[in-house]
Image 1 (cartoon, rainbow, N blue to C red):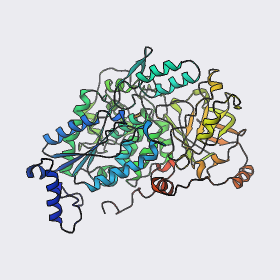
Image 2 (tube, rainbow, N blue to C red; image 1 turned 30 degrees about the vertical axis):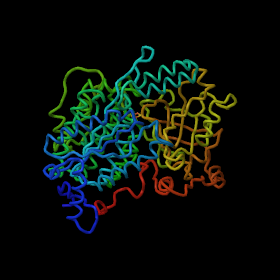
Image 3 (cartoon, rainbow, N blue to C red; image 1 turned 120 degrees about the vertical axis):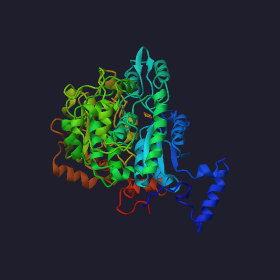
Image 4 (cartoon, rainbow, N blue to C red; image 1 turned 135 degrees about the vertical axis):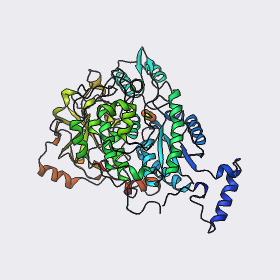
Length: 571
Ligand code: FES
């Protein structure tokens, strides 16, 4: 058995003398005051991603302490250690650019340090997928703990909780409805506590999908960051981690394609973030499981959105928590799930649902026959503009734009966008379609969340709130609008988006799942022959690694050398 319980004996540093390596290891850690009795216990590693740059992880140090209490009470030794911490607003050029680095850090530290199980403590958007990707590749028992959502604040009497509200307040400022002083006031209110964004953004979606995957304490996704319940969840996580260590209950052994399909169903039912698709594909890829866009489209057709949270609906995560959290959703959609999927507790998902079913009245999670949005929140589009697919969060789009044909205004990249979008002489009308290219995985690089192209100021001032916007980038899960994302292949590697010119026409037909560039094939071939390859050539470091190995959106934007390779794990 490759993952036998070994505690301190696991992964001894290579000196050519194992007993000497153990002697040295114990001698050093005894410098912290540990005894031989304690050092003979099974070890639960706890990844601490606290950072002064990361308010989403502002409670993580206390969660680590509560997790340790659970581990100690269960007779094992908790040892916390740091890895990279990523916050959306503090990662240049984007947190996505660094997600794979964090997953490598997680994997290699889990492989390197002696531990029989690991608690992953994260929360902000990219941290949870990065940790799970790394942990799956490290092939050890692990369990995820999240920091939990922030509580809401109040701005001019209006309830706010980053970041759907961040974006709508900023749009109001751009259109002249709010003053500079209002923006300062808003920035004091938008993030009123530590914790992750309080709406159904990427962090909330990833937490819910992780619980649906069975990788978290049942009920562990929604409790607010500052609640006593969040601390109890941390303690219970420590308790379960010890059981997982003792039983070698390794998710890599029991996660199946059905587990990932369940998570996909949950993502659709909660009106989850488009980013979650990319992360779920990358996580599945670490198991050798393929989740393609056709599956998303198929599930999307019969999975309704039933959670009334921003940006698709109205509420906040604290409302969802009071309504009972994920278990409500699982109960409602159980006919769509594989209930035999395993969880960290050793129970199946069906057994968890059965023992935790909730019956009191609430309004946040709708009945499956009374949904917010009757078919899936996210639709997959195809056509000559996106041969490998593109997606739209139709539940957060304007209904009147879901079928739309318009003239295109092209921006060649983020610099071009910044230079021209707010100029008075920009030739743009409210029914035009905005195209932003070269913000894909390689193009930006790192596929930044710039797909929510701002409404040009001259139109915003006239009251235009939404337009069809198309890019090869991503957008924040907290954002709303008629936004087409993840166009693949991306422009920077010669995808059709690179051939679009201002003045062309594009037809969007979401019900027909079509995205068509209305330019004939001969003209596209002519344009193709004139396109110069994009200049993407870092010579060294992580930038070079990224450019040489990053894959496209449908493959999860993972590095090609990190995906599952049979018999390679644990070497
Ligand atoms: Fe961290 Fe939104 S910025 S969860």
